[in-house]
Image (cartoon, rainbow, N blue to C red; front, side):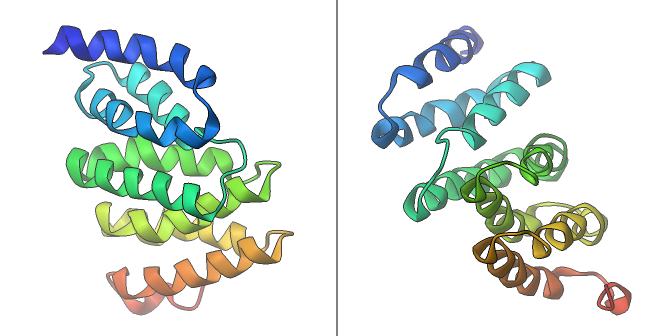
Length: 163
């Protein structure tokens, strides 16, 4: 029960750094469980930060695994927690020094968009994507453009299209 979730949440941040990078994905079910069920918002925020930062420079497969975990989490926790717990992690990574992390953000925005309220899609998520479209790395700009295409059909009205 709750005690197990608290033990898990306390132990994971201490364990993750010592797990080989290629095996960290095996911790995802435990992390997701702790994030989903822990009652304290600050603890969930810390664990969500760990999830996004699981791998310093994630390759394509590792980004896909992290994104799949985030999408699964978004489905389980609902709109409000996706908006208040997952999207802030994206926002924090917009200017990350590693393009792989900015690429993760660009790809995540399109994936998470359907799990937030429409007004968040055409404000916060659109703002994130717009910033990433101007990124110095071509691969990040391409991913942002691709995810902008995923966002457009989700806008509640067409007045945001001009942006």
